Structure formats: structure tokens, C-alpha cells
Length: 410
Ligand code: ATP
Ligand code: MG
Image 1 (tube, rainbow, N blue to C red):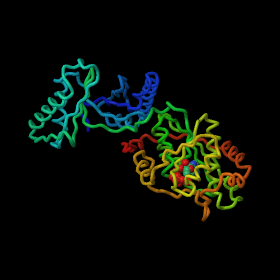
Image 2: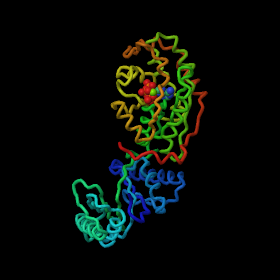
Image 3: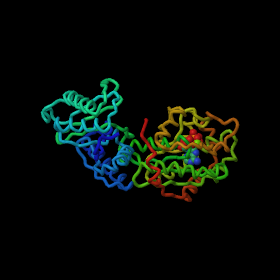
Image 4: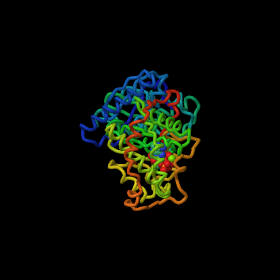
């Protein structure tokens, strides 16, 4: 819900940006602003972005306010956004805007006015509690004038009339949508994301994007060990991730069939872990080619036999890049909930083909030395060859689908 005539989106930064040194903070804010402007452009919204101390303002047409709010709420580094009505920073103007909002939008639910001021103490001849008191009286009078019996609840209001008062201007708003938080995309070095297209890995990729890392998504085509529709599923989910970036994402589709074929020659119980090591080797070779500095996977401790804490130790040892596992402590239900709010959750959870390689009794904690002994020596070469013959696909989600992502419940 937004105030009548709202033509601006007030964008608040994630608190973490505010505690950086001044130069880092400036760089992050610049990046966030640039990213936001590119995202608005890409969605065809006619809007400008203005910066002021710890805030950004998106100015647009009142008709486009909802769309602009949704775009701003999907930008990494944004903690929350509100569609606002801008007024001069005087008590009269603020109360007039509150009265108008109450007249047009208020239905009698328990309400409160919450105000905050930014700037020096003497910038305004009134305090925040005074705005709340006078603003509350203005809402009450406007409601009563149209025959609504207002109810005030300062502790747990159903409707909050927000006021933000700054030295040069003030804003009135009726909702605060959460953004993803984190750091602006591109303020960290890139990371390769191993994305199977299942529930977990797209969320893991999103989590590092949220920390500012551009991702290079890699899907390993499992050949006869995978399902026909896995690639399409991976493309769809990477498309969803691409909707968080202004330029889309380039998915590397790496043919892994030959490498996996070679692994059928080793004792069955070790195959699964060797397959995991093979995928990490592929990711490491892509990292080299793209100057990425790490690998992210969707693994969570104990979720599968190949994800026991001991299994993670022996799979990691295949590469000398750090392997990030943002979901390491999460239960499947928590991951699914995140996937829904991020927008990558697929109703059809098709089995990942990996299990065609999985034996009845997989080894879950073999010594690293044993794995190294049974691992085919050619496996590294097979990984290099696979990466050399990768397909690279530009993905950018269709604009019409984008509006379904968010709001974030994280
Ligand atoms: P997901 O839901 O992401 O498929 P999972 O729980 O099914 O994960 P595994 O199939 O054991 O787990 O895979 C573990 C991790 O390895 C995945 O989270 C993903 O990062 C990576 N991975 C698995 N299969 C592929 C694949 N075909 N291509 C790229 N990465 C993959
Ligand atoms: Mg899977």
C-alpha cells in the first residue's frame, strides 16, 4: 500500500554498508546505485536514481511506483524500500500528507505513526515523538471526518504510517518491503557456482550473490547418468538467478559424461565421492578461465551420503580453491523456504540423475589416501577436456516473469 500520489521509492541500505570505512562505503553505495539504475533500465522503467546520505531515491511516474518498488526490493545491498510521498520538512506538510493517506487508504485497523529524523538536532523545530503525536491526531481526525472509528495501537499496529524527516525534505509511507540485504553485487570477486538445477544449489548461488559476488554458473551434463530434462531445469533456475542481475548470466554447460563413464571402472562404493571430486575439478578449471576466486555448492552437512562432514573433507581436497557452502547448516525445509522466497523453487523436483551413479552402500568416510589410490589418473585431463568443450549460454529471464520473485522472507 502506498500513499496517494507516491512517485518516489525510498531505498534503505543494508546496515553493514554503513559501518565500512568511508572509502569502501562510497564505493559500495556507488555500485548499488549503478546496479539499481541498470535494473530499472532493463525493465523498461522510466526512472531516475538520486543519492543522499545513506539513502537512494527512485523518482518515477506514480503509475509505475509498484514496479519500481519491486525492482528496488530485489537489489543486493538494499535492506528495505518504501513507496513514498515527498513533502517539505514541516509539521504542516507532514500532517497534511498523513491526513490525505488516512482519507484514501485507512479502513479503521489498529494504527500507529512512526517517525524518524535524520540530520542535526536543530534542523527541525520538532522532535520525532512530536511528529508521532501530531501525526496520530491528524490521522484520527481524517478518519473520523469520513465516519471511520480509528484505533491506536502503538505496540502492535496493523497499519503503520511512517514518516522520515530529513533536513531538506520529508517522506510519508505506508509500507516497508524487505530487500535482500547483503552487499552490492560486484563488490566482491566472482565465484563459480555449481548449479544442478535442484532446490539447493540455486539458493547457494543466490546467497553468495547476496554477499556481492558475481557468479559463473556451471552445470555439469551427466551424459547417460543424468535425465534428459535436467539441463532445461538448470537453465530455468539460472534464468531466475539472472533476474537479480542487470546483464544476465552466462551458464557453462560442461559435458561430464566421459569423466563419469571412467568412474564406472572404480569400486562401486567410491564412485559417488569421486564424481563429486570430478565436479569440483571442473569448477576449478572454469574458475581459472574466468578469474573466479572460489566455488559455491548447495551441500548441507549430512543431507546425503556424499555430504557427510567426512565426505566434504575428501571432496574439498580435490581442488585448491575454497569451496563455499552457504547452506551447510540448513535443513531441507529451511532451504526450500528460501528457494521459494528467492524464486528458484521448482514444483517439479525431478530426481537429480547423480543417483544412477550411486551404489547401494556408498563409502561415506573413506580415507583420502584410499580415494586418491582408486581415482583414475586421467580424471584431471577429462575435467580439462570437458571444460574446453563447454557450451556457454547467455541467460536473461523474460521480464514478464520477473515480478513473481520476492518479497524476501529471509
Ligand atoms: P541440489 O538440490 O542443488 O541438486 P543435492 O542436494 O541434490 O543438491 P547433490 O546432487 O549431491 O546434492 O549435489 C551436491 C552439490 O553438487 C549441488 O548442490 C551442486 O552444487 C553440485 N551439483 C550436483 N549436480 C550437479 C550438476 N549436474 N551440475 C553442477 N553442479 C552439480
Ligand atoms: Mg540435486
